[in-house]
Amino acid sequence: MSAPVPTALLAVAVAFLVTACGPGTDGAGSGSPAAQLELRLLTSVEDGPCSGPPLTSPGPGRACALSGSETYDLGPALAGVAPIRAEIHDDPLGQVLVVWLDGSDRPRLADVTRRAVGRRLAVLVQGRVLVAPEVQRPITEGQMALAVPTRLVAAQVAGALHASETSPSHAPEGP
Image (cartoon, rainbow, N blue to C red):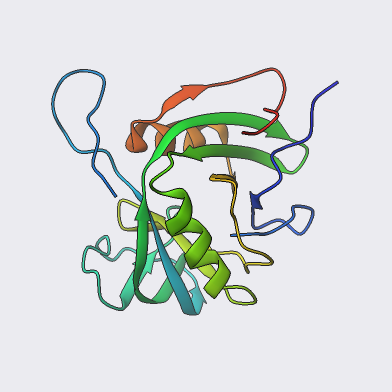
């Protein structure tokens, strides 16, 4: 029997409890910077194909969903956080990518989510929107779980973040 998914759960599915800067290098020694999870407030969203370029400016702008199925209008970047570990979990509603932040990013995430309660917060990776749920409460434990459509997407995001990826048979207990 699986342990529950971590307490700070960031997800787009209704069944999930919705809550929700330094570069790293990849393990291959290439020195390429690790992607961060960028946090921005959502101002509007349009359904339909999106093929625009990734959002690279820290100011307000437009970004496509990672899937290319929606276009998001977003406020300025509020923070960037670099997960140090990621795990992929199976859930009846899809895949969940659980990410852990180091001590320096925890207060930043807590501050951003505290100010965003009741609003939609977009989580971007490499200039594309991964999820944009409504924040129900601040994330203060330094870990969040992101609902992603497939295991492949979860693995790609974990790879882009250069976070150590594992696929446990049960959910972690949390920090």
